Length: 334
Image (cartoon, rainbow, N blue to C red):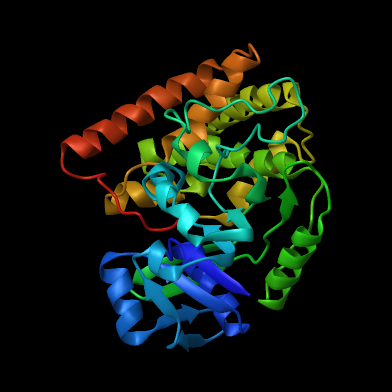
């Protein structure tokens, strides 16, 4: 299968490396020092030893990559608008697009079937650029559970996890979803085809919504947030508000808030992705993790004061980082 990874950072690079090792025809799209290192020395994956894929194709041009069977959009949500106009150059008649962003996706109401079916989320696609250039009917939803990092350009290190559950936006079990499932499993990942990918998205978004911004504001690890009574209560309040929103949209949660927080605490002294972004000077992934949930709260007329307060603070943090010459960020993957 011809697979194009748009954004070869921690998750995109991890997927691209495993796909290539499984014999797929992989093209990586990235830029800067990371791209230069991959071109010079190949892509190194540290997972059960070290694996170097020396013949992987790598470029900064989607036009050069050409039409693919599968396009994995692995840039963070707030960088999608910059790559969206070039996505048609890598799509053909049967191309699938797999989205692996954290938080609520811009396509949330595409083929949703509820009262808001087809509605565009202004917080994620204010100018309609994503809707215009990324065909929603090509999209297969995905929730990313693995974690990885990029310790140096050209190197991807697996930290934990191997699950990539997927699902069609209309809940059907299509032949193309089965094909994608087979590709993921062949590459060594665990996967499932879900008939309600949105509920799985909310389950992960629960933690991203609360732990990410609290950690960015406090510089605390998951363990510290969960073991400090005041921040634990704040996380609980944010999760309770978001659950009220989600349930009005037909979402079912298979865990309790207490179990979700206990799971985060058990991870230990882990820095969330948003805190890592603060520390290395990337723009913060605010709208997909928090802003979109506030927008959904307004749509469903659900009060969410705790979420709104934290959203205001983290937006100001990002503004200050940019003003100080940090937070400009890169287009690397999540």
